[in-house]
Each structure stands twice: as structure tokens, then as C-alpha cells.
Image 1 (cartoon, protein in one colour):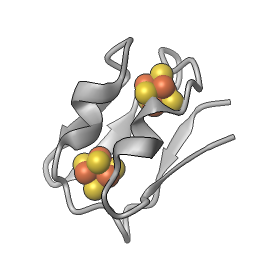
Image 2 (spheres, rainbow, N blue to C red):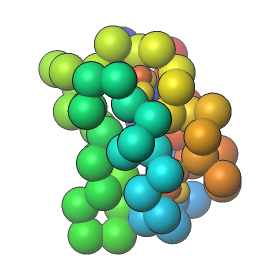
Image 3 (cartoon, helix red, strand yellow):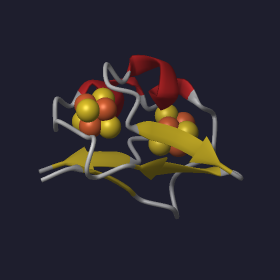
Image 4 (cartoon, rainbow, N blue to C red):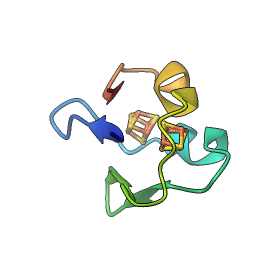
Length: 57
Ligand code: SF4
Ligand code: SF4
């Protein structure tokens, strides 16, 4: 269980990085990447994404 980024939608804006309480999502190049081991599936990043690129199971 972890957040997933749809690379087709992600525009690399970086908004998600600041919303994650455990620092589990970072922009690498021009796409956000989730550290699945660190992610606690809180959903905070998904709510802040302007293009709805993040889903959380
Ligand atoms: S779901 Fe929560 S813990 Fe996981 S990457 Fe998004 S903000 Fe971070
Ligand atoms: S907030 Fe959304 S569009 Fe912006 S870097 Fe994160 S996943 Fe990509």
C-alpha cells in the first residue's frame, strides 16, 4: 500500500514534496517518485496535486 504517481499526468511541479509528512515523495527529473517503503498511505500528497496524478490505495 503506497501512493502511486501516474507519470503520464505528472508535470513535475513539486507540490507533493511539501505535503508529505514523512518525505516519501520527491521529484526526480521531471516526475514525482514515491518511496514505497516510507509511504504511510495518508493521502496528503494526492489532495495537493494540481493534475490528480497521485492515487493512494
Ligand atoms: S500518501 Fe502520504 S506518506 Fe505516502 S507519499 Fe503521499 S503524503 Fe507521503
Ligand atoms: S503534485 Fe502532482 S504533478 Fe506535481 S510533482 Fe507531485 S505528482 Fe507531479
